[in-house]
Amino acid sequence: MKVLIIGTGYVGMNTGVVLAYLGNHVTCLDVNEEKIALLRQGKSPVYEPHLEETLQLVSDNITFTSSYAEADIPNTDVIFITVGTPSLPDGNADLRYVRQAAEAIAENLDDKFTVIVNKSTVPIGSGNWVEAIMHEHFESNHNNGEKADFNVVSSPEFLAQGSAMHDSFYPDRIVVGSQCERSVKRLQELFGPIMRQDFTPPPGLPRPAGLTEVPLLACDLTSAEMIKYAANAFLALKISYVNEIGRLANKVGADIQAVSKGIGLDKRIGHRFLNAGLGWGGSCFGKDTAALVATARDYRLEMPIIESAREVNYSQRVMAVDLLQDQLKILKGKHIALLGFSFKPNTDDLRDAPAIDISRLLIQRGALVRAHDPVALGNARRQYGDMGVIFCDQVGEALKDVQGIMLVTEWPEYRQLDWESIPRVPIVDGRNFLDRERLEGLGFPVIGIGR
Ligand SMILES: NC(=O)c1ccc[n+]([C@@H]2O[C@H](COP(=O)([O-])OP(=O)(O)OC[C@H]3O[C@@H](n4cnc5c(N)ncnc54)[C@H](O)[C@@H]3O)[C@@H](O)[C@H]2O)c1
Image (cartoon, rainbow, N blue to C red; front, side, top):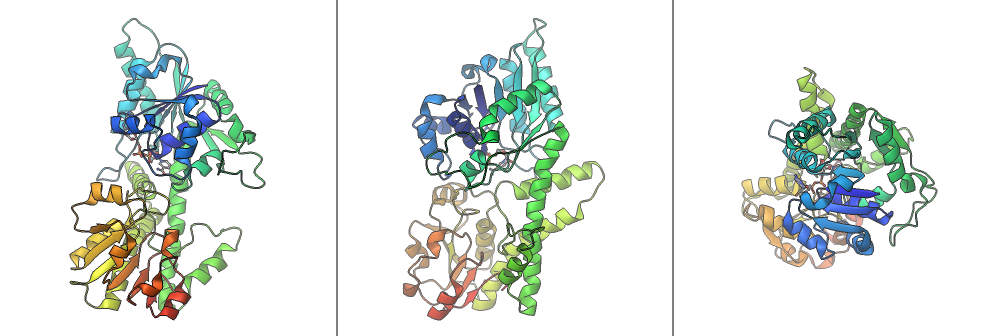
């Protein structure tokens, strides 16, 4: 099929590369010309394991453009909208990029049937809104009485950054929200190889043992939009739940890791998303829980569980700084090393990263902060170069003459550091990730979260 992807960020690039790998002819469009120039050289604008290698493998099936007019929209079977939907100050999603994309698509459509798939996470009801904008825009740009023939479908994305390629080839489910049979059939055909799992796995991304099919849930558009928010809010709750239990574990002298293991072994609960630590960050959980609460308010409904999950999450960051202060007593003038700046390992994404709030708090309390990250320093310098953090290319620079250490992101290499050569200063292990026994054996005071 001929597919167009609008927005070449984390979601758009993964979707485009996976569909090209499955034999479709894919065009990726982004208004950011720098990104398009990089992609044309076979380079990914975002760091995501396996993405660049697979992109190079599918180069015959994929093209890049920054022009809607060049994207051959009239001959495209399926168009995916994967632009960003960041938070507005009141928690609502900012839909300006979705609107711009919808208008530009409508301007270039003709009367051939096209499926428009909204993969951006948009507030419940936005599919209908996109459809209305497109009809209006089509009619004002085609004054020959031509009628647009398209359908807007919601197919939310569930990938996790850091394992996005794997999640796109081997998802738990595909959700298609539309009551238009023709659209559902077209998407069943497009996603057929993923549903049947009959493609040859790409190098480095083996199929999980026992995976023989992926269910496609077809439902109405509003339910599909709600599934995305409800799923993200549930995962966010799980993280905040274990962090709240961790606070009590800390007081009563229990070990949250043992408690999590004991809870997670219950199959009704499961072990994932039960690691106590600095809580969630990233582009989705914070933004999507805020948008869900904002949508509920439009209906005069409160969502106290989700609001509490947000409160717990953001106060974990303050708690971690307090833990370090308890150890050092005085933070003023102390040299603190932050290990990790990205919101999680295997990504260079800094959106809502705990490291940002933690750095700000430490600086407010007078500390000198040196931060290291294996892949996110480019973004950190570009986006946060003026916040007063010294970004260090080598972890050794961050740890030179250090007086306190905070592990923020659980990059595997931090477990392998030459800890013997590092001054024995207090470590707050914000992810309960380091080899605590070994470090304590070496003489480091190690403070975990909920331990
Ligand atoms: N990142 C994730 O892990 C993830 C997971 C699931 C869902 N989502 C959702 O998917 C959407 C995209 O997220 P992302 O992380 O890929 O965003 P991103 O910010 O990485 O990428 C968005 C891209 O869209 C481009 N863009 C903006 N307006 C455009 C326009 N009018 N035409 C063409 N391109 C345009 C931007 O230049 C940018 O490159 C969001 O709604 C997000 O909530 C993200």
